[in-house]
Amino acid sequence: MPLLATATGNAFAHIAYLAWCPDTGEAAAIDPYSIDLVLEMARANRLTVTRIINTHEHWDHAGRNAQLRDATGAEILAPKAAAGVIETVDRMLVDGDEIVIGTGCRLRVIEMPGHTMTHIGLLGENEDGDEPFLLCGDTLFGAGVGNVGYGGHGPTLFATVERLRRMLDPRTRLYPGHDYLARNLAFTLRHEPGNRAARALLDTAGPTPRFTTMAEEEDINLFFRLDRPAVRAAFGETEREARFLVIRRARDLW
Image 1: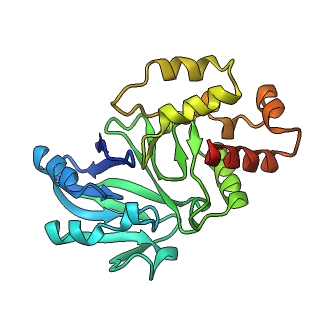
Image 2: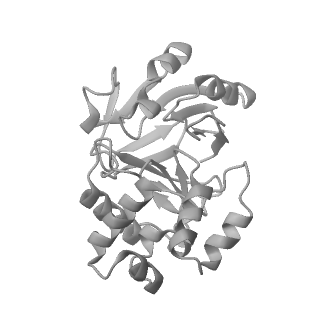
Image 3: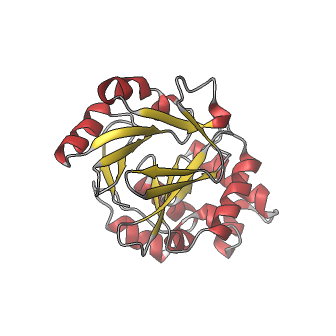
């Protein structure tokens, strides 16, 4: 499935996504916020936005659904658990659901609670079919994970991250809702200064988003590296979940 990803350049570092079908030109906008940019992406690529898909209920992911729906007539798909919070949902999504775009491009819904308790992700494959990807909203970021301060729950997020590490192919490329990679890498290096992979990636970071794989995250993401000696030394010899939560609080304050 082809996927268009464009940095918005706004204050929230959003990334705009269109997943689309090359046979029909139908497209799904994921968590649209910069509506003018989404519409321009569609026009420039001769696509028709027929679906709006929300990964969770936060206003900067679902708050402009109506504006895009009014411009395109697209139907709105959102987590069932967010019913009543996200308005005018045409189809409610639960774990295991399949979303078909056009003549056969597919996204599979997986539940990923923690950042909020309604959060879902969308699994697909690239156009060549040789690399899986995950549209992960605010659950996973390059070198980081989501916060839990706005309707989330830390232990649940820990369980979700651990489950994703077990279930996802290491080749899975992550497409988060915001481009926080550079800042997250700097946080990694603040607490694990000898991390060569994080240093190398930070040195090459630029204005164009760089999308990491799950395999790369094992090398650069402190939330994936809980048992590494430097991480244990920095955050305490506690059990893994407690260390995860300490790191999350430290990132909140950094």
